[in-house]
Length: 597
Ligand SMILES: Nc1ncnc2c1ncn2[C@@H]1O[C@H](COP(=O)(O)OP(=O)(O)OP(=O)(O)O)[C@@H](O)[C@H]1O
Ligand SMILES: [Mg+2]
Image 1 (cartoon, rainbow, N blue to C red):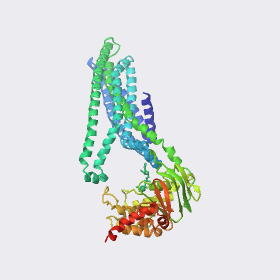
Image 2: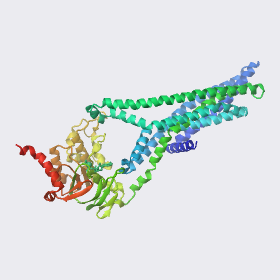
Image 3: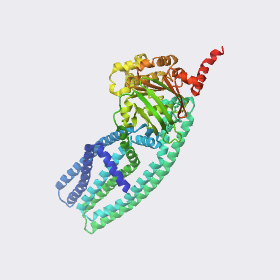
Image 4: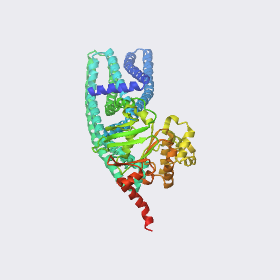
């Protein structure tokens, strides 16, 4: 019960904050509805009174007014129900919108580290999946609960005004309903909790088999059968449990209704007895029977509402914990404004371990970049290159060590401010399913309307011609998801991502394998003109292709999270260490066929 109270309080707060006006209107309508229902009982009594008088030989005149009144009230109930349904739908939608806004506020504000934590991600997914249906359910539940409660109170008042002795007798009829409904809510709640992980797995398996991105691989590996079998098994387990659950609910409903019928019979007998004793008139007894019917409906509504709120309880808890992460997120936005650029960027003794991992991804890493330099980062898969890039882009906070701009630790600066000075092309850059213009313009969303600058960035990245040839030019959606949309090749996408970074007028550019999907000519052109393209900006680029790396001013070699060598290409070759070994390995592979001729 205390849980229900807490949940109700929570739902009211959520609905109230979503839209006060709609909440007040809905509540007032509920109260009006309850008053009308109560009036109905009293009018039924006066109709019966009048009819009994007619039966005793009086004229039909006195019956007309109560009957017309009854018809009027009945019509009013119908109208109120229709208005209420529409109002309820609006309120549900407003709660839904506010839930999504809260969700997006938090998801957008938390640090990248949060996405590494299974706890956060799980909760986000749960809130997100449930955010589609739960706010509806919650509003319906709240409205039902309030309406049922008001209806019960209204009916009780009407019954007391008829004959106070009737109230306890009528409430008796509701007792079995009270207990079985409560038990049913509990059962439903437990079932929902127990099935959540299974439903999530089922949903995922469904998505894998219908997703566009997965379609290729699922077919190439012939996974249709295996994935389908997995899906069917999960679904079958669910339907088995559902059957057992519904059997239990049916048993409960049968028992509840039979007991209810017995209690009803007792109530009616008590009524007959009261009539016989002359304590209750026939008309009052008739009205009481109508009241019993109406009361049963109201109690039903009340419990259904409570049950819906119970079922949304997990969602409310999740949403609460999720929204509670907001203050921490806001902290990250605090801090001094970052300077627009730097003369020297230094990382000293950086260490970083991913949440949930034991081995550090970076261990005592120190590097230096001077303004206008092009610095390369090389190393084998998993050596920590991308991690270092993310730290320098202020996406993660280091566990140890410092990053400083011109000698000042960047920890003092606001994160968003720092990030404004960095343009990153990630290894797994995003392909926005939006127009070509937006795909590049999003590099600096504030300047999205600077069409010439966007076109210039596209030209520099060598993708302007491709875009101009699209069916709707710059307005073509780069996705098959939209009508008239076109997909691009991987290399063309990579150029779009490069153009996005070029468009972001930032002094520090990080390129994580920007040429992995470029053809040799495009790659050659990119690195030949990198200095011109980026006009004096500081560049950190990561690459596995040593032909491009050798053009860098300085090269850092990462091995298992540590910098093991650094220097120019010539220095590193002379040193004959790890770099030289990797370089020769690649060069040999390229040259081998020719030397064998
Ligand atoms: N999100 C993550 N959570 C936990 N560990 C991670 C995560 N991302 C990377 N790692 C681990 O951190 C280490 C460094 O990864 P990183 O992505 O920085 O390597 P990389 O040098 O960029 O490799 P690649 O050449 O394959 O891109 C690896 O051991 C990797 O398994
Ligand atoms: Mg990487």
